[in-house]
Amino acid sequence: MKLTVIGCGYLGATHAACMAELGHDVVGIDVDAYKIERLQAGEVPFFEPGLSDILRRNIDAGRLRFTTDHLAAADHASVHFLGVGTPQEPRGHRADLSHVYAAVDALVPTLRGAHLIIGKSTVPVGTCAELAQRISLLSHSGADVELSWSPEFLREGFAVEDTLEPDRLVLGIGSLDPDGLNTAAQDPGAGSSAGEVVREIYREILETGVPLIETDWATAELVKASANAFLATKISFINAISELCEIAGADINTLADAIGHDPRIGRRFLNAGLGFGGGCLPKDIRALTARADDMGAPRAVGFLREVDAINMRRRGAAVELVFEALGGEVLGRNIAVLGAAFKPESDDVRDSPALTVASRLALEGASVTVFDPKAMDNSRRVYPSLDYASSARDACDRADVVVIATEWAEFVHMTPEELEGVVRARRIVDGRRCLDPQMWRDAGWDYRALGGPAPT
Ligand code: UGA
Image 1 (cartoon, rainbow, N blue to C red):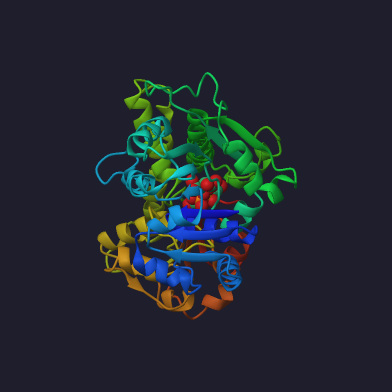
Image 2 (image 1 turned 90 degrees about the vertical axis):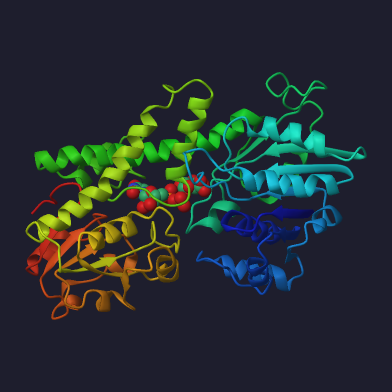
């Protein structure tokens, strides 16, 4: 099938490459000429395991190309995925939908005949109904443009796998009546071709048994927001319990293992530590809270404010732990922060707990040196005043304390012997509870873990 993907950032570039991998003929479109140039040259402008192979293979096979020309969309296909970013507004907690509107405004007037737009970006509930009105205003008289929404659930670091082997596909369909009112709730499927088209696009994936949940616009929009809200809540839940473990002297890892055995709870996303960051969970819980306020239901998801607060507290708690490890003063002390990305297998530093901790310690007067295997360029751009080393060993040179802030495998597998004679003092703060406490203590290190003492 011929497809376009509008917006070639993290989500769009991955989606375009994966759709081509499924055999479709794909054009990716973005306003950013630099990004398009790199993608067309087969280079992924961010770190994502496995993506560059797929990108190159499909460009070489002639199934995938990238352009800044928005008119190419109408020429190339009648099915258009929308994968532009919806970041948090600079002032406030709402999602900034300006890129979504700009993409629709650029695309819709160019369309003639029957077209289907399939939105993938994370948008607040009610967005599709508003966009559909805009689409009907912008549509040429000879055009029949349908809007559907199929939220994306991919994780950074597993983007290719999550796109090609998803847990589920969700498709929200709807329509406006002649008065511009949303008829989705009554009969979402009436007159829609979206289900059929989506089943054809994802045929190979659906044949493996992946469920396709067809629903109305609002449900699809809320499925995505609630999935991320649930994940964020799970992480903040375990971090809240870890605050009790700290006081009680209990071990949060053992506790998580024990409750995680209950299949109703499950062990995944119960890792206590520095909490969640990145471009999705923090902004999505804030956007959902803001949307609930706007809808006149501030109490419905009021607990998400607490989820956010618990999460942000972990960063302060990590800073305090470093103070404690250094006897209450960090001024003039050398601190190695290992990790800058918001999680391993990513170079994304948006809302990264690691960099919040590093910058706060620097503000307190410490001499902070950061190392991350993949996120150095992005970190330098966001926090140019921090010091950066070219390896973990260099970052630890004459360190008074080493802080593990992102659980990259190379830090998890690091041994005390590797740092012997490198650090000034044997102190380590495990912000992700990912090290073997016994190994470090046996080697004479002062080992401290965020979220309570690890068993001795
Ligand atoms: C998240 C969701 O997991 C995806 O399903 C969703 O599609 C995506 O947002 C999105 O909306 O686009 P992602 O932001 O890539 O994916 O990252 P996660 O793997 O969810 O991790 C988020 C953060 O939680 C990281 O900072 C991670 O270190 C932290 N985390 C995760 C914990 O602190 N503890 C855990 O047990 C798990």
